[in-house]
Amino acid sequence: MPSHLPPFLHPLTASDSAPSKEALTFHEAVFYHQAPLGPAHALWWPSKQTTPNVVILFIPGNPGLLHFYTPFLTAIHSDDTTQKLAILAHAHINHTPGIQEGPITSWSLTSQVQSAIEALEAIKLTCGPSSKVVVIGHSVGGWISLQVLKARPSLIASVFLLFPTIAMIGDTPNGKRLSPFFSPAGRLLLSHASYLTRILPDSLLSYIFNDWPLPQVLVLKILLHSPRSINAALTMAGEEMETIRELDVVLLEEHRHKLFFYFAENDDWVGDQKDNLLRSFHPDTGALNIVHGEPDIPHSFCINHGAQLASQCIKWLDVIL
Image 1 (cartoon, one colour):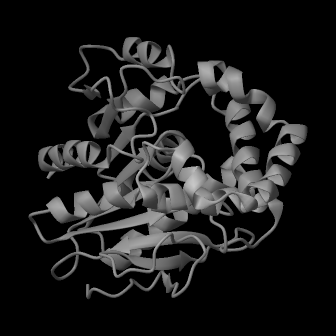
Image 2: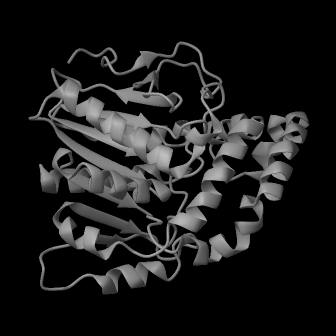
Image 3: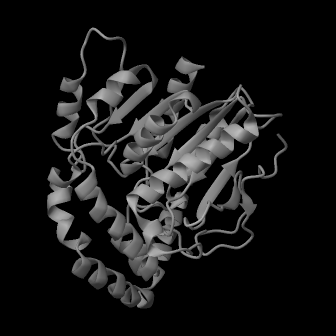
């Protein structure tokens, strides 16, 4: 496949979602879904040579702004020695400022799952049956990845789950602490408060988030200036609290040979569910790849620790390929 966009993506020449207009290794794009779903922001890293043998479908956490993850995904792409790895990062519908269309129903968790399924099917249709698709999901993107695996198991070679929130998310420390902000009143308050952030200078944001690289601060700034994106992210988060409940042990056992987990030592979005997940697997039913991360790598790894997670994903790719 040539280096330009695959046919299922449309070029995005200018986007409020991008913190920088510099020449980069990836292409800005839009993925147009079937109605009634709205479009989604997408980033495409083409294979360095010919048609890709492996395509990574990346599904972000919440909020699903892809530019938070570009250092991580670029590192994976740069470290590929096969020259035949491509990456499609697919945002959540209505989370990206400047790419927001369609009815409010397309903000739902169910719609995000369906949009990811459409992205997977587009990859397979374009790249052919011999190509392998590896799905990588971060946080709630891990839960969405598992739903995609459940719906289309024959199309997926492996699933990498990074800091996955796949059970009882409402009972986690952060789920309990932040739940008031996911209510209708909380969503209204925070989304309208975003107008006030427009008067904040970039220097103040950089001071508040002094351990963040400047490009990540600029991504946050773009989000803070978009009431619609904030509302969509909080609406989805509220549905996560209600929907992501009991661990789907049957699904995990059925596909355990395809699953790779990365957990933080301490993660307030996962809490005790990590131990519950580990206890749920039967030890005599085959290998299971679970990595417990370094103590200083947080749930929001994409801000400062993309290289470490990229290295881990490359190791997993070496195992399955």
